[in-house]
Image (cartoon, rainbow, N blue to C red; front, side, top):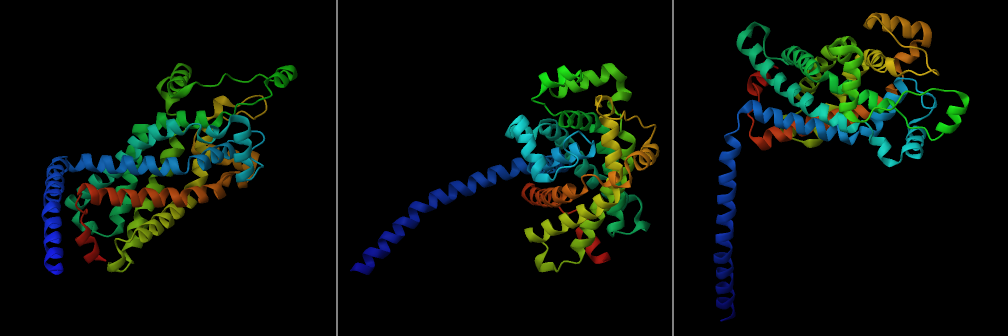
Length: 349
């Protein structure tokens, strides 16, 4: 008697749960066509933009300190990571660690979206039009380099604004400075203020100041980053291909490798970007081009300055590249983006 009562109760629970399951299935099915209706390139833009914003925000405090080290601002280039962060918090509060991150995120969303989307499009174009090049990671090197250059050209003014905002440190001893006769430039107020000021001062050319070393650095960096990521994944056993830890590890190693080879160019770029902000306590930074910048830095500041902030950049690039690649791969799977020539690439390996 008890067993029949129990079975009847269970049957009732199952019947009551069935409409709920059906509603959930219907909702998921109704959402699926909406996602499927989005063009592939738009999905790639969404996945890339989200991956870029998440990774950039995660390492924003380290990025701020790195820029202050690279540009040799007084009182920071001789401090350690924790000491620099403590000083920023003391001068500007906790939000000071994220100063310039708004411009950084506004820049990184279109930059990362374009970077990943154009990488996929360039890769597809190369595979379809130049089959003689094969299907291995070398294609990722070419497509990644071309995508890096495209995204930089489209978003460089926002990177310039981010650097100028991050470079400024609000001092609390303004009265003491005024007594000493030190004149400080007025602080920029937000992205719009930076871009307006730079455009009035140098026109369109001013908005792209430092773009030379950026392009010189991003072409090999972006290409090597994609190349190493795909190359490392090819050596991962098939059963671990979808592992998040595997993707994080491959992304971190790829970022480390590419950044080490191109870091001096990033230092030249930062010093060119903030050249007009140098005050009386700094030497005036005006480089004719990338190679002139490299020579001048080595001659006046020593070769070690070419790697100023590289330690914090290693700390920054590991989580940044790992989060970026992993988030992009997961977003691709969630949005239903088919793998780009995956079967052909694996078979070619």
